[in-house]
Length: 109
Length: 115
Image (tube, rainbow over all chains, first blue to last red; front, side, top):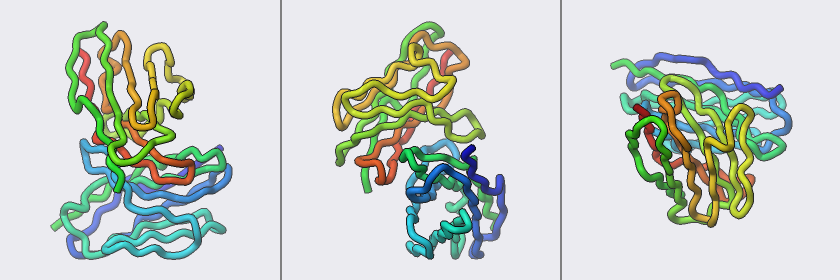
């Protein structure tokens, strides 16, 4: 079966750095997406990785290791507005997005 | 980035009525649109995938006669919840992409409350 694992909840302090991990086992791989979802809102696109390595985009970076079936989202200089759920999703061999359950990130002052 | 709109953003209706939700890609042509449902504090659940001009593909457990999907153009898909009941109350979100390898962009969602 297809499976995506990410922690259910994480807590971090404003101004700090947090890393949200995602491991996956899917039938094929055509890329991995990270989305941010604030409570009561729809997801918004953060990043897409299809090759191994780190992609940096401002305060957010995303890393991929295809051989390990592993990705992480790194958030730096955390702000209160970063409190949200972060969803990991893998595009499988049928070009279907397989979603993780999401990681709820709580930022404390 | 690509913009996807949904209308209406909120619907309150009586049990037994039908509700239509529109999803539009505003600045790109969406070959594929997706409909999701999300209950409070739960994960996104894919309901169906629709490609322009063809019948939607429904996920297991989703009744195609209850959730009618039409994707008549490259910029518009509609979801009609027929004979809605209180258990259909949920957050319905559409997303769209231009191609199989492209990013899915989400609409803002529609909150449905069936009384």
